[in-house]
Structure formats: C-alpha cells, structure tokens
Length: 472
Image 1: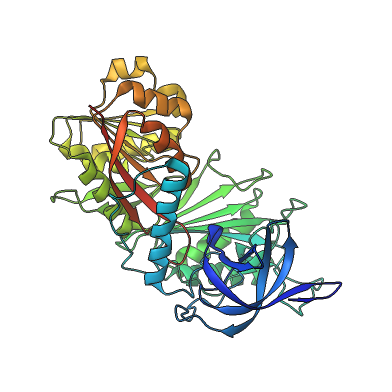
Image 2: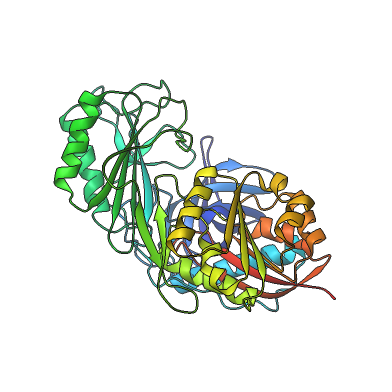
C-alpha cells in the first residue's frame, strides 16, 4: 500500500470474486474492497476513494495482470456508462457468478435448501437483446478527464452517470438495442443541435427536450416517444415530421409534455402523432399453437429481453404443473403476459396488478388472444388480495407471483398462507427479497425446484423461478 496525504493506492491486488451491484471484491489485510469494472483474477492497483472500518471502495487505476476470464469490451462507453459492468468478464463465468448469487441469497437470507437448483439458463443473445431503452437530454454533459466545460457546451443525449443525477454521458453507440435505435438517437441529437432546441436542465428545470424512449418488437415494429418539458409546437412538430420522414421503420410516433419536476410519465397524457398508438409483440404459445399477441403501449410493462421472457415463462408454466382444471392467480400480472401464457392450461385465471393502464392492456390482449377465462383487477395487492376477494373469485389451486424488486408485502404472504394453494411459483428479479418471502412461505410449503434465468447479460441482475408445494 502506498499512502500520501491526498490518496491511498493499494498495489498489486488480486480481485477475488464478483460482488454486489456489479462490483468485484478484493481483500486486503482483512478489509473488503469493492471495485467496479474489473474481473475476478485481475491483478490491479486500486485507488481508494471511500474507507470505512471494515470495507473500502475504490477504482482500478492500473491493470498489472489480466485475468484468464477477461474479455474485450464491445461497448465504446464501457467503464463510464455503468450499464454493463460485467462486459469484460467471460460469459460462462458471469453465469456461474449469477447462480452463486442466487444460491447465497436463498441459503443465507432464507435458509432455503438449494439442492433442487438447476443450472442457470443463459441467454442466446449477449448484445442487442433489449426491446426498450430510455435516453435523457441534459445540459450537463459528463466531462472526461482533462476536459473543461465551455459556455457553449451543447449538453448530451444519453445515459445518466451512475450516482450522479444531473450528468449525462453522450452515447454514440449502445450495444443493447439493435438498429435503427442508434441511428434514431443520433439523428434526434443532431437535429436538436442544428435547430438549437434547448436540452433540459434538471437542476434549474429549464429547457425543452427531456427524454427519448425507443421500443421495438421482434417483427421490427418501432415506437418512438419524445418527452418535452413544455408546449412548444413550433419546435416539436418539425422534429416529429423529420423523424417520420427519415425513419419509415417508426410505426408509432408519440410525444408527452412533462412539466413536472421528475421524469416519471405514467400519470401523463401520451399523444400519438403518427401511426398506431401501440406496437404488437408476439410470443410462442406454451404447448404450441398460434403465437400470442401482446399490444404494447408507451406505458406498458413488457419483459425487455423478449426471447428470454419466453424461457422464463416456460419454466414458470412447467413448475405450475397445470392440468386444465385449475383456478390460477397471477399476482403482479402487469399486462397479463404470464396469465395468458398459461391460460389455455387453466380453468380460470385471475390477474391482479397495481397499474390500471396495465390491466386495461391485459384485458385487451386477452380478447385479442381469444381467452374468455381470464379476469383482471387493478389495485394495491395488499388491499385487493383479501379473504373476501378469494371467496368471490374462487380459491386458487395454483398461484404464480412475479413481484417488483421489493418483493411481496407481508400481508400478501400471509394471505397466500391462509389461501393455501397446492402450488406457488415465485418469479423474482431480486433473489434477496425472494429469499425473505420464501422463508415465510416455508412455514407451510417446501421448495421443490429452483431455476435461475439470465435476462440481462453483462449485468449483475438475475431472475429466479422457485416452485413450492403445500406441505401435507
């Protein structure tokens, strides 16, 4: 270790393991050091910028010896953007780290027996797999080392720098969404600069252009949503006309006026400028037959890795062991994708979701797909899923639950325990909160199968599907 009054440099440190939040872990003199953008097995020098009693955080300032697991990054923004922190790690190793993450969380936090865990399901596509990206306009462009800000700096269109709310990294090429995603974003940026359309200043809440949202389907439909801060048709309409003329691939061109202090637009009106108000994604039907269709609007939730979503839902359906006679509850149903994926194998499906717009999408999709055995309800899960609700709509034989990262409210877990369905299939994007909930459910259930699924290559995120059977 080299120490001066200004900084601490840890020299020739071997990175030991993958850690939380996409960071890697080193151990120096009994102290754990968290370091981003390095690979287990790398030997590096680390500059420490935060030091506590038992741990420290730092950044690698020199790569002394590369790990055998190290691969070359494909993204030109790797190391700054923060979106794909594991991009330089061999993909097979990424899968091992994710499986271990699930195992550790279930065993340590939930005291779950993981002997029934299957090997993680990897993604066939490691790049260009996302069907939705959201970019931010900002007057505050992130400055690289040695750069200084000038008075005429135009700002940036790209992604927020991690932990820095008002700085945006200008993105030239993103390897997460296929073209014309990059071409559309760069065209909007260049048009805005050429026509001097002001970017948004999140600190002072001034400016015009706020966000650019791009969604696409496997069949090649594209939705583009331009979010602006105020009604300025003399600025907005020419921009939309330019996009419509330049990109015939855009089948849904929409805009939102957001004059609020935050970027959320779920409560705002969306105006369709040209084309359709939605795009349509298809998914193979579980067990075969005509593919399912899902209408996706500007506010719709849909799994952002469409191909992996089919695998994820297939595991959930397999674990449900449906015979066609069951009443199935799909909790946190979103736009009803899982509900309709299994509906043909159920007597009745009841879906519950907090977002009213999502439930409207679910009802429309069920009609499109020809399901008359699906009912969808909107409201806070803890308030909707009551004993009276279950008495009215039927006791579930099977429950599939796919909650947000925070997991299920304790009252929801208690209601499941009281309803005592024969099987529960728990789909989670956060193994830590899933482990917490499983620990409560295991008072009446036993875990029979565990299946991790990688939805987001090059990130630390992992989905996990757990099957539970009611104890005799």
